[in-house]
View (cartoon, rainbow, N blue to C red):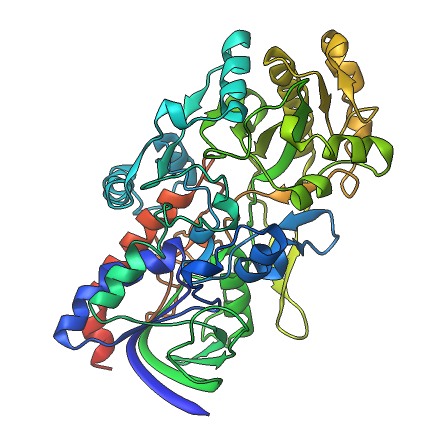
Length: 500
């Protein structure tokens, strides 16, 4: 077994790990040794091909098809240099003050989160995309919402030099998306942080990690040769995401019992809804996610966003098989898509555990209020589709495969709860959050307001698993703001940790 020693080890390189690495990087000038251990590979520029199955294999865990224990929900999260920021659409919203108040974490102040969020909005070049770069798929949601009197807003996005390839979820081939792989990690490496790719951390011990480096048949070579490693550290920051961070801590022998570990997982359960127009529309070309509608967040518990997915993903999210399924798929150039996000509650029964091999297992049940939200979302989305001129709509809880425009007045009769059956309707996770939630004590939380694990002064968490409940918006910038707080705490604690 190889031996390595650092002052700070950061596990994961996504929005959380990348932000922590960049913030701590100036310490390298004073002789502090810092390493980022990333399970995924760092792809070469020519490897961003945009081919759906190929990129899913290289950039996602289980090709984006991780399933919950009961196999009723698909979980998609990235594995790469840059984590999920590589496959994220780049939508960058600041968390509302009302959500921070609902979280009610002592020591977590919205003004502080706002200031840190603003820093990353600037750093990642977040702005509104020019209107001439918005495609028909985005325009139709906007027009449909406006016609019906629904509130609709444009997403700020973290792009620089966008060429409208529409491949955001498969890794931008034009280096336009400003994820941690383009911004924070290169800055950290310039200052002396070592990023070790293809490195899976298996367990955390007493100020040490056990990891294995395995070279895949793609990407740049890792800094370390293949093999098993014991990496000692004065401080360890876990930034593996809402599934893998709890799983890693559950596999590890921590000196403190943490009853809330893995619990209170939220996912923003999502549906991909599809409508067909009677003519071709621009849908793949242009940024896929430029507008959102939060009209129904308070009243019905869901958000709507523009989206455009690729043939394999689209086919998976349609109900049934046969002629009608094939007919719709043959008209991909006519399809409009809207993504539904349900604002799910944080309940202890929705959780991450590990199996006998130490692999994560996700137990997640769609609660009755969430099912009601999904049902309402399909009805309202169908109306928006038709208001935008769609010829027919496919709703997963529809009584038939297609709903036609002449049925718009009977939407509630043709999209019904008895058809909304988990396992039949393809539900996916939009944003994984929770599992290492912040809070005041270890009976109901895993870390304090600064991401330090209760009872383990050298161990920190910095990713979406910190969220005590769902963010009610896309969480990317909030993850970075909280990671910024964690980095500040590590800086404060490090002198004492290095002396012990």
